[in-house]
Length: 403
Length: 177
Image 1 (tube, each protein chain N blue to C red):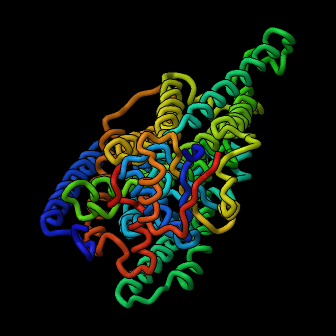
Image 2: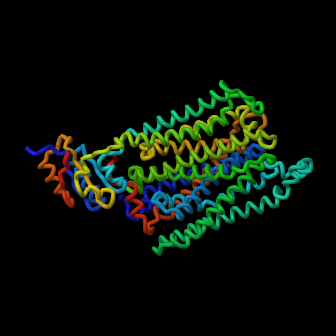
Image 3: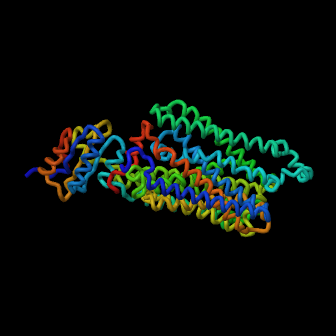
């Protein structure tokens, strides 16, 4: 083992610090450019901002769900990614702040926020009880408050276990995680309805929230894979600690989530396609013409078929350098998926890619990555006082001969 | 001249001892080695280099055959054999074919797994020499066995028995044919 306390060595600390500074600068510059772009084409800005924002929020919430899932189910895979996922959950305050532009953009993003449109539309009048601006803002507050509270206590108690050595897993953390996962599933479902589905307020799909949950799981697992591979590379602080079996476990979960995402996506499509109803089918018609169909095809091939076929291989899941490429592809396809879901309704003229669609992910991503790396350096990279840590490290098989 | 034997078998008390012994046997150069235990032990598979077998390939073939037959069967029915106009949809409406295709992929993969496993293990097998060792029945209860077969080029009735004894087994016995 390179280090016994799993803290970040000074050299890597300096590197991380530099990456953190640079990503903050790049993020800030990109966001400022987007804000300048917003002055000339505000609709475009909010569209680009929303889908980019949903990616980073999804990755963060996915990480929070993984933390809670691990407390409830145990398992070595969760112990080795706990610090990474916890660091991600501590970016929730930043994400709450970054939600402000979406609040400002309500009139631009959501047609139901305009009185004259609602007055002319009996269906929207019917939905007005739920889809109105004050209640929308109240719900935003509830989601973020809930996420912040769960993230706060998950981190606080985990840190307490680290400093005092008391095993809090069995009691408090599990008691917190059960309700936490329920709140997570409900809040993500409602948030996806509020922020995304209501862009086309006539349309509805009951599996929509689950589709986001599957996507968030994919993003979070890909982030964990990327970090584990980078940190356990030669000379890294987790070299000789993270082994092929750890990557194998998380790779298997990535495969499962890839299938889950495909299952949810196809279920939604099949049901709406079979029903062929006026209220439902336009959402897909919009996304299957004017160039958008190619994005749809891209999703089928590279969000499902290709990673699925690759991840079937046992040796690929155990080889960091190859697994990290698949994780990178999945992260890229998450952006494409969210773009395909969010953007088409706003651009009736067919597929077009605006420069802000490329810059907004960089902008929010820069700030998010900066905050995440800052949080990651605060604590040791593994939960040092977890009673099962030794077992979890042995499980990885980093010391055994490769086979 | 003694009668030829099937191999030599060592009995161990626990999985750790079996894994350690398997590793040493492998290091010594023996290749035709089989381990018997009441439950799967990952380390023993690794020690004996047993990870690569043809089962995944058989399952993959089963899955592909299942998927193709599922899709083509529906295509044949809906387009060629019994075309019906359903709500004006094209006869070849692929979205509605996917579920059956998926189900048959799973079904055929599962059947290929079971049959492939039985086939690769050579089951059903009415007779196997290892059962000639009286205590071998414990392999399905709480004992762990390692058998070096006589087919192994390094096998020597005397030397191999001595080597196995040096691994601290509970006992080493000859397996009669």
